[in-house]
Image 1 (cartoon, one colour):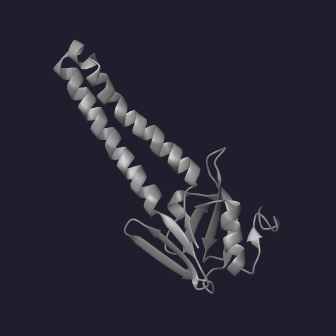
Image 2 (tube, one colour):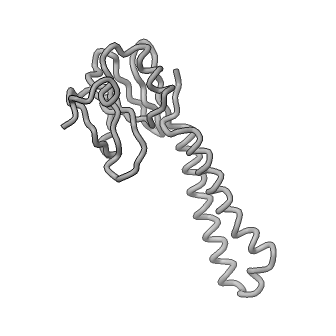
Image 3 (cartoon, one colour):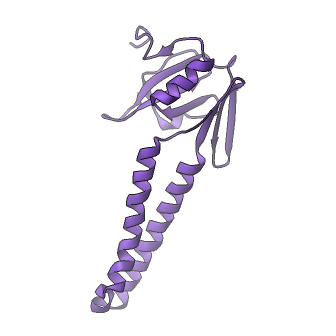
Length: 160
C-alpha cells in the first residue's frame, strides 16, 4: 500500500495558497501597479514571483514524491534521492508521537530502535527511523502486517 507522508488535504491546501501567492505579483504588474513606481517595483515583483515559484515547485515536488510503501516484506520510505527499506524483522517499535512544538500533529513512526518515543523531531529521520502523519488509514495498513502493539494507541505505559 502506497501512502503519502504528509496528509493529502494539508499538502493540497498549501500548494493552492502558494500558487495564489505566486500569481499576485503578476496581477499587480498587469493591472498597472508597476507603472506607478517604475523599474524598482517591477524588479521587486519579478524577484517575488521567482521566489514564490521556487517554493511552489519545491512543495509540489516534495508532496508528490515523498511517500511510504507498506507491504508484506516491510516498510519503504521514498523521497527525493532517498530510498530506505526496513523488513518487519528489523522493526522493533511502531508508535505515535508528537513533534516537540506545541499543538503539532500526531506522527506515526516506525523504528529499528527498541525504545518508544513520545516526542519526535524531524532530524531523527534516517534509514532506520521513518515518520508519517498519523491517520486511521496508515494505522490500518500497519496493522495488516504488524502484530505487535502500537505505542501510544494500544498502551501508554511506555511513556514516562
